[in-house]
Amino acid sequence: MKRKKKMGGSALLWGLFFEKLLQNVDASVMVTNSRGHVVFANRRYLDFFSFSEKDIVGKHWITNVIPGARRRSVKKIFDDIKRKKTLGRFDTPVLIAGKLGKYIHWIGIPLKDKRTFFYMFIGREEKYLSRLSVKMHAATRGKLDTTYKEVVNTLFQASMVSEPDTARHAVRVMVFAVGLARKLKMSKERIERLKVAALLHDLGKLAVDGRILFKKGKLTASDIREIRKHPRLGSEVVRFVYFLRDIIPIMVNHHENYDGGGYPCGIKGEDIPLEARILCVADIYEALTAERPYRKRFSMEEAIRIMEMEKGLKLDPGLTDIFLDIVKKGGFREEDS
View 1 (cartoon, rainbow, N blue to C red):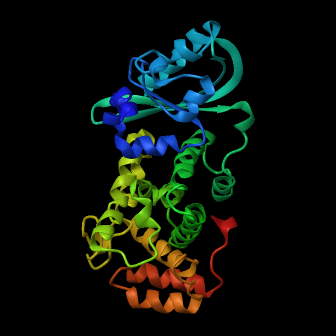
View 2 (cartoon, helix red, strand yellow; view 1 turned 45 degrees about the horizontal axis):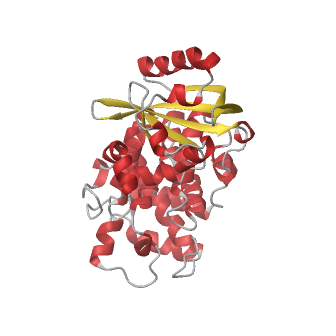
View 3 (cartoon, rainbow, N blue to C red; view 1 turned 120 degrees about the horizontal axis):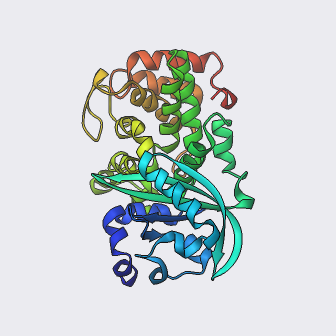
C-alpha cells in the first residue's frame, strides 16, 4: 500500500494491470508526462540506476540519468517525439549513482490516455541490443522495423508471464493466421497487423488471477466471467501505444462467434472484422492440437472433425473450409509466416 501511495499518479494512469505488465518486462521502463517528469518506473529501472521511487517520481528524467554533455541533444529528441507523436530512438551513456556508466539504447514511445499524452522510454544495455526474444525473432523473421519490433517484443515478453506456454501458443496462432491470410491474398499491411495481433492476442490474460488461469478443475461462472475480460483488457494496454491502435479491433473481437454467441460484444457474421474471424479459426485449431495441463492434444483428424462441427456456430464457414483444406494438404510451416 505504501508503494501505491508513492506512485499514485501512475496507478491512476495505468491501473494495476498496466503497472503489472511493465513490472514484468525484461527492460528498464520509465514513463513521463509531457513535461518530462517521471510518473512511473519499473523495478528494473530503479535497480539499474540505484534509485528509489522518491528519488525520481515528479522529477525530470533527463537530469536524473543523462550526463550534462548529452542533455541538450536528448532533450531535442524528446521534443521531436512530443511534436511529431512518433517513435524516437537514441543511444547515450547514462549516470548511475552520479557516475558515468554504460551505454543504453532508448526507445521513446508516445502514449495517449484520452486527450493526454504520456511518453514511455524503454532502455536496454548495449549487450542486449541484438538479443531480442528468440521466439519473437523467429516469429517475425526480421520483417518488422527494428523499433516497431522492440515495442511489440516488450509487450510479447510481458504476456509470457500469464500462462506457462503463452509464447509457443502465440507463435503457432500467428503462423496459422498468417497462412490463412496469405491464402486469401490479403495485403502485406493487413497481414502485418494480423501478425502482431496474433502475437499479442492473449495479452489481457496477464490481468486475470493466476488461480483461475491455471485451475485444473471445472471453472465456475465467476471464473468464466473473469477470463472473458481478457480481450478488452489486452486492447486497453495496446490502446495506449499510439501506433498499435489499428490492431485493437482484431484483439477485442477474436472471441466473437459467427452465430453471435461469443464475447465481449456478441456481434456476429461479417460484422466481426475479417482479421478477427481469421484469428478465431487459428486460435481454436492451435488450442485443439496443443497439449494442455488438463488434457492431451487432439489429433489432426479429431481437430478437423470438431472444427467442421463449429462451422456457422463459433467459426466462419468459408474461412474454416479454406483453413482445413490447407491443413489437409500439409499444414503450415513456421518459416512461411
